[in-house]
Image 1 (cartoon, rainbow, N blue to C red):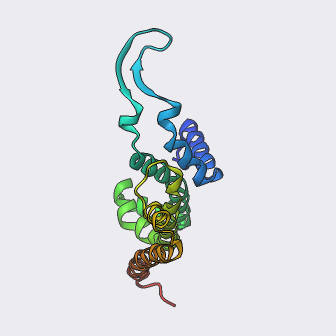
Image 2 (cartoon, rainbow, N blue to C red):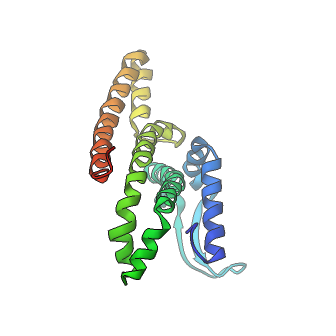
Image 3 (cartoon, rainbow, N blue to C red):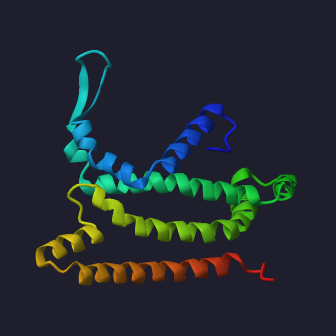
Amino acid sequence: MRKSVNPVLRGCSWFFIWFFRGTPVYTQLVFWGMFAVLVPKLSLGIPFTSVEFFSIDSNVVMTSLTAAVVGLSLNEAAYLSEIVRAGLEAVDAGQVEASKALGMSRSLMMRRVILPQAMRIIVPPLGNETIGMLKTTSLVLAVPFTLELQFATNAIANRIYKPIPLLLVASIWYLVITSVLMVLQSMLEKHFGKGFEA
């Protein structure tokens, strides 16, 4: 939407990216974790009247898992949108003009010409951001009553009074998962880099 010709969409997307990239993930997660306290009831009705069509308890909608997913998703969306925008802008404008000259529709041009070239640029930072997001899940401790890996290891460590072995276990799990993601990233980079090796 940052590339939209509509100034309202462009402004909204700029604000979204500015806000979620500019505030700490921990703060965002605390906000979403405390959402049900801040807004006890979600309702749809006519403003400034007592007319209410629909109402639901916020605790039903915003569980701790939902709060964690919403918080991490909104934060990552801001970063990933900038990665994709940069990748799309890196494709030479001549490619777009040539595609239009051949009579390609916008969707065909994106699918056949622009995205394959942009993916070479998008995949490395996208992989790094995905791995970073995986490690950011340890901040989900900010959301009350979560069942995230770091939270679970801390809970067990507090019971048995041996935090170091459990922190090592959590670290090993993070290493295993990030290693798998790194291998997948490498495979994607090789796939989209075909024909561009120096």
